Amino acid sequence: MIFNHVQIKVKDLKVSRKFYDVIMDILGYEIVLDIPGIVIGYGTSVHDMFEIRQADKTAPLTQSVHISFNATDKGKVDTFYHTALENGSMCNGKPGLRPEYEEGYYAAFIFDPDGHNIEAVYSENIGKIEPVNESV
Image (cartoon, rainbow, N blue to C red; front, top):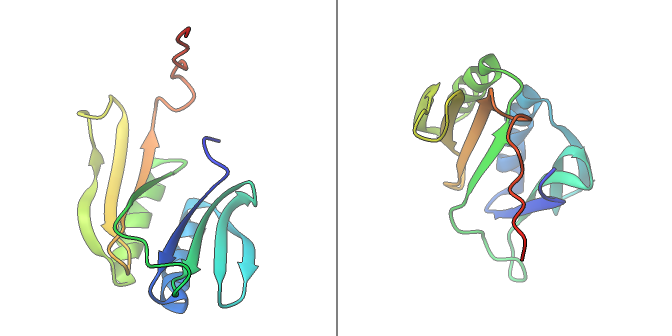
């Protein structure tokens, strides 16, 4: 786990929830936080989640971001992509290998209802990469 949580502010929480409920289910992430009308969190726990929050005067709409979610296999990447398109998103990169990132990197990219670049990736190298540990 690299982060505790990431949150984006969305124009319409109901629209975004409908969209993310579908694609997060495909990727195996459940709702772990639900404050009605305010925020929905998807992940494995409240300390490992992606949140969508209703934008308002105190929480302005998040400008375009890129977020990549891990998928357990290439089939999940394909299903994520096709299901997202069926639910109103636009293509930002069809499913396929991306050797320019690393060998075995298989990903698809879509735009969510607010224009955020959302990626699903399966990498044969996850868990094999040694952490970089530099002395200060």
